[in-house]
Length: 115
Length: 117
Image (cartoon, rainbow over all chains, first blue to last red; front, side):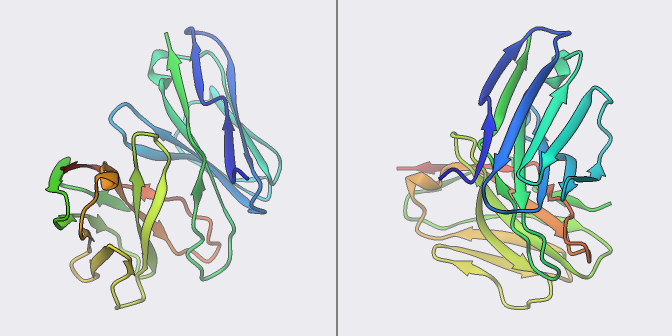
């Protein structure tokens, strides 16, 4: 019954490694997002996809590459992990209807720790 | 670019009392949405309440209500009859009401609310 799921929930890895975080939604939504929450709890948008098309790409290092194989999935791949990448990464999804509030539903978050 | 400011990093309230969390925002747009999200220790982001900018009436959801002052660009959250389960981080968020509808949320830095038994 999980609406927006992320795997893994926790990820501990060494600097320099490459890792992926997966996100799936079963709500029938057409838009998915990645947000980053830093150690001070500040949440900021990273990417947004609408119908598998990249819509928003904020100032994020090229080491971060999102991939949306279909409308229900948005994965985040991170190359050459750095200490500063340690954060909680949230996936979210929404159904875009013109003129509506288009509530975003969040996944449980993935806590990434880079050692 | 839009910004959201929460000037109270921490707040506390006695159980059963009322508390108000402040939020101001900066935008040149006339049409947008405002939200309050709750993040308990489980870190799940939970939508508490939302407000459409074109509506003058303040939104209410059970014990939660907002005071939306569009001219002042203020959007405060009032929690009545506070309960222990209300203890969490609360985030104010703004979303532009673009025609495409897929604009992201812009968050404030959050207010940590403690509820004292």
